[in-house]
Amino acid sequence: METAIYQAYVRILTRELRPATGCTEPIAIAYAAAMARNTLGAVPDEIQAHCSGNIIKNVYGVTVPNSGGGRGVEIAAALGAVAGNADRELEVLARVSPEDLDRARGMVRRGKCSCLLAENAPPLYIRIEARVGADRCEVELEGGHTQIRRITRNGTVLQEHPASQDPLQADKALLSLAGIYEFANVLRAEDVCAVLDRQIACNTQIASEGLAHPYGACVGRTLMQEYDAKDIRIRATAMAAAGSDARMSGCPMPVVINSGSGNQGMAVSLPVIAYADELNATREQTYRALALANLIALLQKRYIGNLSAFCGAVCAAVGAVCGIAFLHGADEAILGKVINNTLCNVGGIVCDGAKPSCAAKIAAAVNAGLLGWAIAQRSGYAFGAGQGIASDDAEQTIANVGRMGRDGMRQTDTEILHIMLEQKRENCS
Image (cartoon, helix red, strand yellow):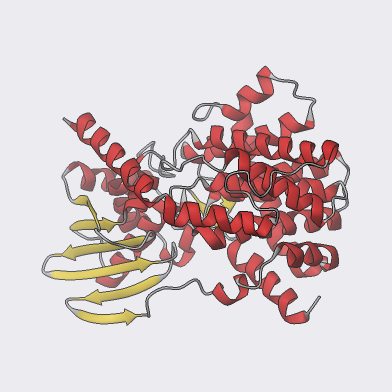
């Protein structure tokens, strides 16, 4: 493999597979609020959070970690302003004292934190406006959960960066199914062991927590109780779902993300980890399978973007089952069939925000991926050209799905947000 492409793939894994405590959208709000406090030098008297529709959608129904069960933009912003450690970025709310929580809740209760929809904003956009007395600041994030676009204080620009672009854009342009397959086969363990060991440790820990305790809808626990827990397919699916059960319901354990998402980080890794355990795979085999799974998920999101109306659990599940197939010796052709068979089955799952039902979507997507792999194995069949959005070439199918998710589902995204905001108004009335 060309050295430049190999190194680009290593960079992608190193930068993308980061730890995060809590769902990344409320955490991004908390991070921006913590940066506002740092800019002002004191906890703000008042905060306004101007957020894109996609951010609001993904904060509305998910429990903010260390918030005592709180949900929504307001408590995320208040906690970030009171207790957030911006130096820890996506782990900004890892430590919150009872006193911090009381103070943050007080801000929300007194109406000192508010959320406004930022019209015509990019999908990932947050602008925190905060004041202490007559002192005011703005912190603007765009394009990434910790990507600062601009910071101002009393009208003076302290930081300003060009319109945010993915810093790995050039590297990700090199991603291809053939390249990922080759990379997995020539991978040197020492180049990825630190990041993948962290993914294994963090994501396994929260999955075990979700299986041990009744979080959310208990999707993972239900799978283990209602079906044959000796079946590796059930265990692999249940682990991924259980991690989401815990995370969506406020478990403060960190996870290692993929495509900016903890749910996707768990869905792409935990089924592979379960199968590697079942097969007594070596550490090196596990690394290769996980690297392939993560990169195939990222290949799909390169076309769609991190936030859209398309459920990212589908992309993650496709990657996971490709990793499982790779552990069983699948070649590039079989991986292409797995991709087509899965995307043509569950490519229509919509993202209606982060919340407990994400665990069920993960389970459905992983199950669909396993079915797609079984079809490819047993009959050699793959859905192809002439069947809806499918192409005979798996990469073109990925591009087709990306076009559908990025462009075709924009109005779907808008309508989902309108429905959620209408329900919020009704609940508040």
